[in-house]
Figure 1: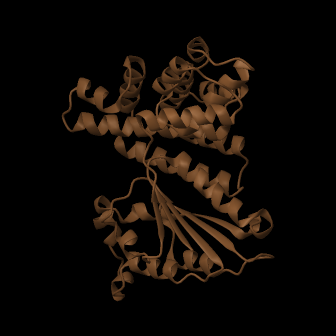
Figure 2: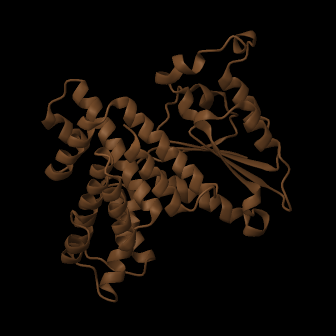
Length: 333
């Protein structure tokens, strides 16, 4: 079985992965039979070893590869096709070698390729077997997002009126990780009564943005003590380490896009419209983007990926991994 999940809605991708594991059953899919691979620097021999491994006390193995498809996007094509002297001796391109390994996986191995936005012209995607189950996870918009948020409130055991729901969607946007976290806070706060717009304004408002901006400010300025204090404050009010990582990743994406739009000659008004940010978060985002070079932003992104992988593979517990990430980013000049 080969599953390909890609798109900007990484929360729904995460939920789809949990569904796969649940459908297989805990007894047939213990952690020892699940491999997480970082596709951004994965070698063919590493993929081959994971794919061909025999399940341990079970019928199936699950191999989850993140970031592999992104290596073969058009903008990376020139870099991806540069070959060393040794690689030039082979007539088989890297994407075809990887596709052959994936397509030739035994029936006992379930492979999931997970990535952000990918084009239909992606070399690796085009080389995968037609039997692959390909699902695109685009961000939810408008009525779809409102419907999802309403169901999320219901699953959490709460009720919300339409005015509060509209305000919640407007403040949080389409990041479902953040939405779920905010819904859980609201349901806990409201108890048995219906969530009102005053509740949303009090608990959500700009507090989420202010907290993450304080953390990013400290990282940009290299103030480790302040960054650690900001992180601890977020943890103290119930924010999970994964939530903080998601918030950092969201702000990083905004910074990259803001810098790219500004470099292309767009006016600040056009940039703000494209980012769909209100005045305060827009000013903070532009200020952060101006302090970072594009190369440093890319480095920031890869370090976030490494931290996420370290947590998922159990190399570090989530709080320690987050602390190491913030310490490293603050010391990076």
